[in-house]
Image (cartoon, rainbow, N blue to C red; front, side, top):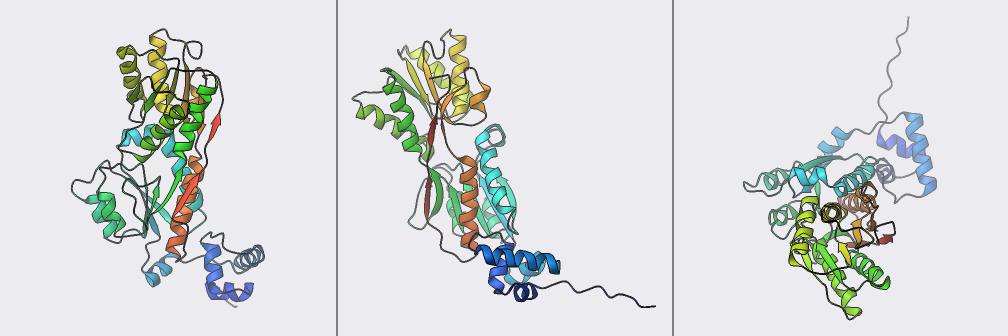
Length: 337
């Protein structure tokens, strides 16, 4: 009787030889890199299937001292993170890209870092790099993280430095587009519920709003900070009404804040769009969950997440990605304006 000896696990070198490519090309294919020709990609995939090659993550980690883990750092509280559809879209995009690599994602939600727990974790070598989203000017612990591992920011950093890497959306242009749309529709008394000025997105959307009004020779009727939350939008809308400001249109810096504003207007007997036109920002699921459906600025949050992951993976592979990527926004017209 003969006993079949199990075949030894195929190595990356054997896959490279079978495919007729270099070892580094196989590595790029395994990690989901797009920097591979179609012919090489097909050859490597065929060799992997024929040899039943399984990437040995543990062995590669030991050899390279890499953890094959990436931290997603969100300087917000859990209520904000789980309540805002923006984060779901961004995380989905990041995960979609990482799923084609050998990296895993570690989520860290930290509204602040009083005992340097997040900083210590990253500096301990537990992750190879970090993606940071929704950062504020007060989040100084992010600066310490950035000195330890490669970091890619979602949005322009509050304290941008020459060598930072970030993927942003054109918040200024999106806000300008929304405000100009209202102006072109004949509205002349336009108010704004803004995001916090501690965040670059809030600053840029406010700047775009002001620029569109200025170009039309107009000034805002009222501006109130809604903190990018539904409750904040409600409170900001209430303050505008209490001020006695007369407005016929409202640009709101996020769909969540717009949902809060709509509720306050409804309770006050103010009809949308008959009495006041409203435009939001995000084009999140909230935009079609409210009545009337929101006219809003679409930002490509899923694409932003994918691109952040792509930039970080390129850095970790020794590549040289663009330092700054800015994605376009577009206006989606529905019933509210």
